[in-house]
Image (cartoon, rainbow, N blue to C red; front, side):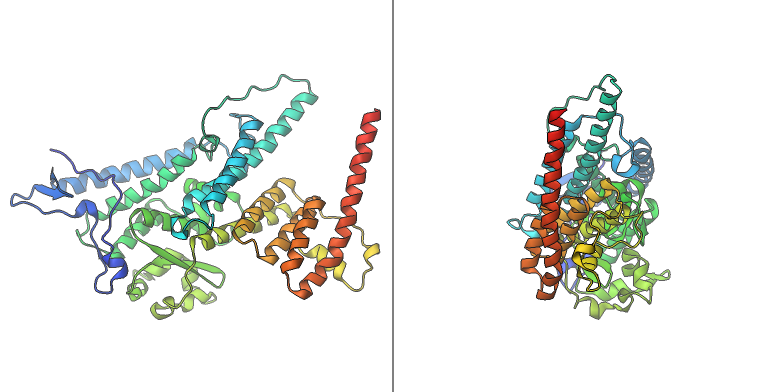
Length: 470
């Protein structure tokens, strides 16, 4: 007998998403017309042998086994990531490769979120993997150059690098896998949800689909949210898929991507400090029915929904429909803003409480004279983390070019990184968009930065002249 393939993506009937008359879904692989004998079915016009009990038992067992073995073996096989481990990998392509990845990843990111494309066509998963690949390549490139400098100082033989052919971005390792393999991982999760739905009724209700996604993500795979992401792996898509632990926004993105593969549209909104998601439906009251102590809405979005201190706890089926829906670009923006905060906190770890605008306050303080400020007394920051924060800020500015406060913060990070020329440029642009009172705060700081840039240039020329004479 021939077993019906369960590996094709689901093709849900859309009536349950947009029609108030029905919230039932019929998966494409379950739409069938049994013959009188009960063992021949026509699925999408193809006659197949179909023994329901056998199929349910065999596939259910196979799904659970392959899910657990594949998931944990992928974790065990993953190689050390420069971004997460802080160590250089031994399997290096060389600096030129990482430079190619840096360029390709930024180009692909810009192309994916381009305002010339429709928002619904933006892939959240691809965009976040482009971000991860660029950050990984940046760290790997830095460590590769540091290692070569040490080898040159010790007169050691240079370590040979791997020669690569083809797409550098696809070859870039992310926790031991390529980008396409992480996208495949989302496909695998979606197929596990399909298998979870097999024993259920042929006409799958919206609630049952959400319950199946919850079972696979939070029970079988054990995904967990962290309230405050302090480790990079919790804020990058491949890191969350690999470890099962992630920030709320990253788990929401995984949820959205899995449901998209099932043909189920998820929508979201920013409520206070929380980002909430739910399936697009005209009967939202079903999401707030409490079973086993929790509503589906709470299971999908975590503890914030049931925390009385959170604005999300006040939501019900009526207020849910009045929320402003976020776009894919908005969601990417939230993820990037979280990366900026994460890497800035890590960069300024030794200067507890340091804010990006601290230097601005010092200059604007009326009790201080501008000439008396010691501009050389700047906090000690971790350069790698500061560079990652700057890169996240650059991407967010591509999404929000007219956000004056974001551009101000970007300019201040460049100042702390001693890139005075770029800092002057960004802060000058910011002054053109900022409110008058904010521009007044920035003006004396930018003037001093001009002098610092000139001083830095003179020192560079002087050092170059000394080296020439030597």
